[in-house]
Amino acid sequence: MLTVNALVASDYCLIPMESGSKYSLDGYEDLEELIRDVKDVNQDLDILGVLITKHDGRKNVCKAMKAAIERRFRDKVFKTSIVSAAKIQEAETTKKTVFQLDRQSTGARDFMELGREVLSRLGLKIMAGEEVEPQAITQQSDLNQSEDRVNIEVGYEDQR
Image (tube, rainbow, N blue to C red):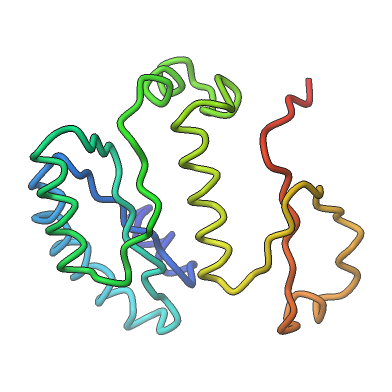
């Protein structure tokens, strides 16, 4: 039920697919049906992209699954894929973000690149190295201009 509510309230969804698992493609058909059902209530819902996760380019099964995903979903597949990395697993078990654990790790860099790609697909400009100033948005109309800008700070700064 939580998934349905989230999709009803969303404009976009990201679909993660594990590169080393055939079950990712099998499970997609169920998700596709769910998205069709939700579109009866939320016509604005769209798939922003398909994200390849737990990718290990050294393994033939991962390479084959990545190729199959790219053939099936074409331009919906993000250029960025998330590698299978020990730091991501460590972050999960320690209940930290990969940025808190090691912001220079391969996994952290992958997620930062994914963030940039998501912003790009949404048509938002990225101004690396600048922090977001909440007071910079003075009116709701500022959010709707064609020249929307999102400032991101590259890296992670612990606020403790």
